[in-house]
Image 1 (cartoon, one colour):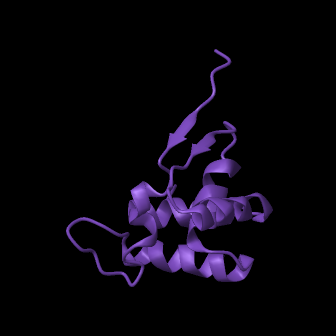
Image 2 (cartoon, rainbow, N blue to C red; image 1 turned 45 degrees about the horizontal axis):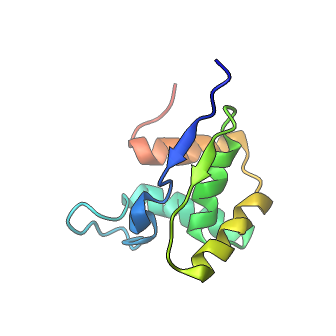
Length: 105
């Protein structure tokens, strides 16, 4: 239908980068497994975790547009890092599996 997919709030309103010590506080943050994968990829790519999350959205074959809202100028500048991240199919599967808590077939 020639429609563009919009990934609204791909950083979860900041929740994605909070609680990456694996501790969930009042439903915020991410699971320890997902935190480990995101941190491993961020370290490998020399970027922050937000850049990995944005690169994940941008790597999707549907060519989604990531809608990021922030009042922090530095955070907006950092989003450009995602354009230089190369995630393999295995990287994407690792993120999906960690976020779901189960293996893909």
